[in-house]
Image (cartoon, rainbow, N blue to C red; front, side, top):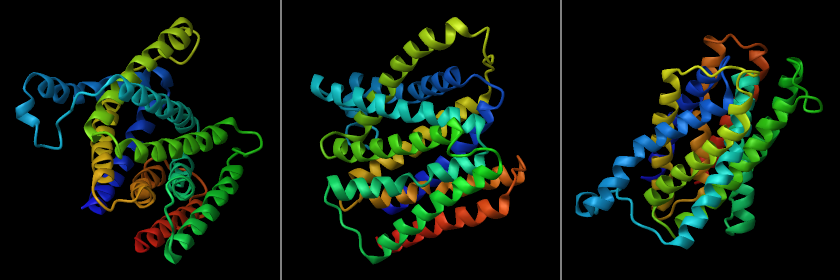
Length: 298
């Protein structure tokens, strides 16, 4: 069951990436991110309200949001900070990099989660999983060559570094998820940290973007911003629920979750007509092959 949920999350994340790219084209990054988070809050708010006003209605379903204590709220504020750090880097990188570079590099995030899972949670890899990690790492470095052909050198492009930082902070978030979900309910984690994200992102928008909004790229609302929230909330629900199920491994769930990179890659190839597709396709096949080995190892 948890493998199916991880695969469902992967496909939803792929569509999420496409909507993110569409939303960010010629648009202001910070308000796009804030707006998408506010839509996510709107999706989750009914579950929170019903859980508090009529607990019996959702009590025995996966959608029930239990109340948590002050200590738990502090943990979830930290979760919001980590995720926002990753998203801010990822959104800026996604706006300025070809989607056929940004999405596959972000898709290598499970490798860093796997390595962290070994160090922190004592998870051990078998032969298949080890091969998968090595292939994915090789593909990660090969994407830097593809980027260099388009003027995005790792030595000079801050956007390439942004997607790398987004990947690393995303891996930290994945490891923290496993820690949180060993102690707290998955809907409590997803719901409360999303609301804390909205508060933090609102402060960032008012202090950093709003005072200089007339001097920078203007914000344009698009319905694709709302779709970012729909697909992300659904993908995260499947992901958090999978991690709660007995026998689930953060290293495998995170790996399968990134298989959705196929969706934005083909969008970039056939809709946006990105360049150097042969080299990027070889690199992406490497990422997918690494994921297949890790899946077989599960």
